[in-house]
Length: 218
Image 1: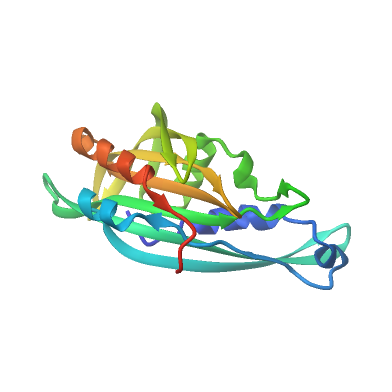
Image 2: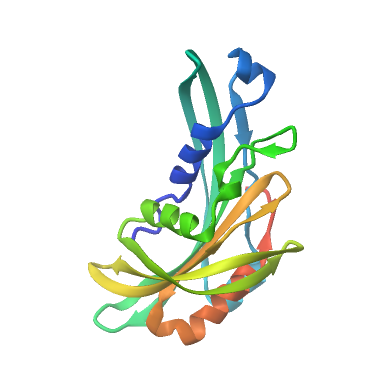
């Protein structure tokens, strides 16, 4: 599984297709433009759970589309913080098969109404979006649900069964995902780890889900 393939591309495209609202945007005199503030896991928690910080990436997405015969432009900048963890896996040896990411995507709120479709996504839609952006990751049915608490907010997390390809080998994995609104952004944390390590890694991923920081300086 390519952990560097951005989750945010699919989220951004969905956002761009739905956004409208400010006066300049409606008249066509200026684009609708928003940037998400990055989020990450508390440093002491990522270290304690063995997930190594890989950095924060940004992606700026610009799209021009037609509304009622008029062209309009939307620009969105999303951010993703990525963490990886190595495990000894039979037939693979040492492999970076643990992945945790936190995606920040702007709410695009106008007159108190969020224009980002993520605001209405359930966990099944979120995990489908994640799977579509990670090469080699296929997600099957939901296995369980739990609740995480971070940034003063309780949010629902779904756990899905799936498979991921590491070093050419297919591995059964669990995928945790959910979403929450914090300040001007939606945050979408995602955790992936081998099912055979669930006894130890589920607790680690749940700790990460409870330990987000936002906003931070990128």
